[in-house]
Image (cartoon, rainbow, N blue to C red; front, side, top):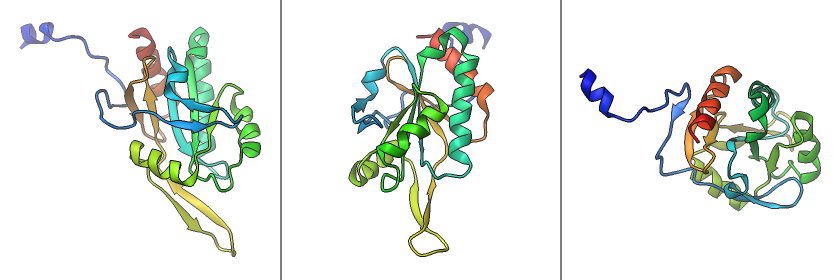
Length: 183
């Protein structure tokens, strides 16, 4: 058995779920908070972390974005090789005017994407993401239920990892360092 192990290529030992070779989450073409159409190809050479959320989220979304700030700091000199991409699941309320300060509050280099309702349905299907509008206690109020993990793409734009919400910054920073080392 040891001889066989020596013949196989070294595969990185990620802490996140390894999606290498997955046939979904292949990218996006959506408008950012500045009105520019963005695709995954815009970030060649960077590790891209895609998170689906909404600005009025009370806990999961700001926690996830804060962890991405921490990860960027943990990467030190390689911090500029990390691109965070936030895709809103609430384009009805998350206008560009609201997304600009929301993202700048975390990091001015982070990108927020605001799909149309039709684009959101398609990108959510492509990424296998759940989202649903949930009526609130008062007329006209609502919140959004949604998947809470992050998708990680390598520097060549290939889907590589899924990081579950609540894992923490340290494990994902370790995984991103591995991706950068092997790029």
